[in-house]
Image 1 (tube, helix red, strand yellow):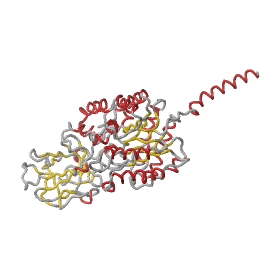
Image 2: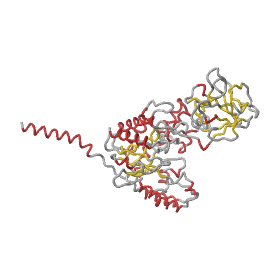
Image 3: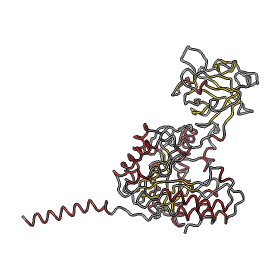
Image 4: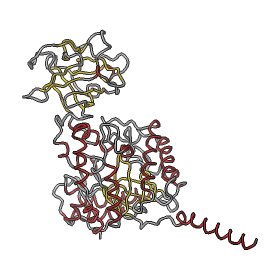
Length: 509
């Protein structure tokens, strides 16, 4: 009997050891990581490759384009009273254009659109048999909120707008815009003619714009060709041979619905991500999967795949967003190339509430931990008016977590007046201090998830860029988790890491 208990004890011990070893020997990565963001690959960012949009008809009128309409007859702008909402009628009485006079397009096809107003309602006709005066009260668009924009062949910004009743909008009075004009012509005194101003600095070029712009017949092939050519295994070999040890791969929420995601998104990005994991493993690289675009948009930027530039992610989106993280973690938890899952890229304050973000981060962390104890979980700091240390206490109670901070030497007028030396000094002084502020001896690791070797100085020499890049590598190399350069490829060659390495602007080895 004693022998039996002895044997059973050892069998049980061996069983427990076999269960515990994978947890106790959780993979220790070679920190800090030196990585690059593979932006504009699986989540489109049009500024990196504008030519992707060239084949879209009327590609200056994509989803989210902000437009204003001025009557040629009245010389007044169209606007919904009070910016839209209950009882809001559409008038033509504004001498100048600002927020209330600006409409955001929801594209139906190349010439048909919904018009979203300042308070997020849609312009439309009233209920059937109740007149032709336009109102802006509907929270969701339907057929009566759909309009066709007819552009003049000789002047594309000279337009007529056809309503769902087949008649054109006309401005015969400042107090009401009506859909009851059946005539034609493009004369200035024609009440159905308007000058359309496109706010070019407000246009969006993201995943929603490219997929909905090309439409369901063309978008799948356009995106597939892009995924197959923009990043290949050659790029992973290049990175590995030039001193990098990881890639940060932005993905969109629709990847969890592949191969048939909700329209207008198209399937195929999941296979590309699978390929990336294989290429990373083949070339000794690790993968940081970054949920770059969440449903509802966490920052209203085109890289969040927003339709129209409104930031609408909140409590109601948490469950669905956690489901995406759970999908990614379950799929790649056992892959040897997985280093980390980043729960969200660049949430923007104050639109993303801190309490809501923490609730999501806690649930997202638990979703990852269901599948892996070794992969890191990355929590992105909020951009905008937020305390850089606001997540430290929260993250301190979690295991294998990193805080992602993004440092740009762009997007602020301050940098426009800096000399080369001032830019370099700013990195060694201010950015070093910023990084130190979120680095604690017993807290979460730090990750500079995006930085750029670019500035606003004209005529800078290669030596200037080398000094500036070296300063950033010196400082951001102190981050305990690592850093990721913001772009690998880009139409502006000197912003893409591959070009900078090939042209000796950045030295990593």
